[in-house]
Length: 158
Figure 1 (cartoon, rainbow, N blue to C red):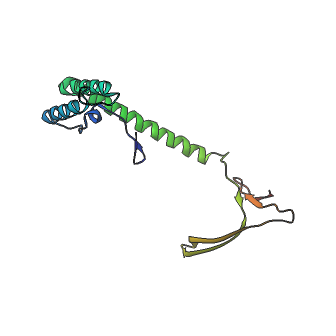
Figure 2: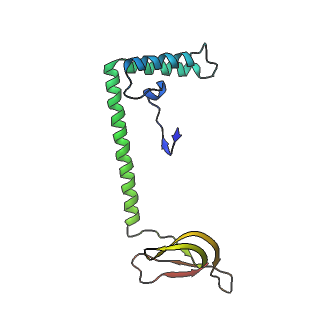
């Protein structure tokens, strides 16, 4: 489930709708509430029976202190592995971007009419009014690219 750009993993805590630091009484209340809501005799949803069993299993695991402690350690290990994987993926992306064979997209050339403010020697554009490609007699557009370590840009008419 996506929420705010983050993937939400269903855990035994989310099945019961409680926080990880919930007390025994809060756990029991949540179980009773969810069991009543999803009991197949009261709920007419097609998957009510399956959901009720999930709720019962979640309560059974979290109500026993040793099982709950082992489950919490497993959640922490999973979170740590996911953080390490994300860090590794970010590093791989950084390595690709800094590689000697770095791809640089070609740029269309043209005249732009903009509104903006000059900050630190650069124009910060707030509004673009018009764009006109630079075209040759054949109607081709000028495109430039600048290869890594090149002394001058490459120009192509496409």
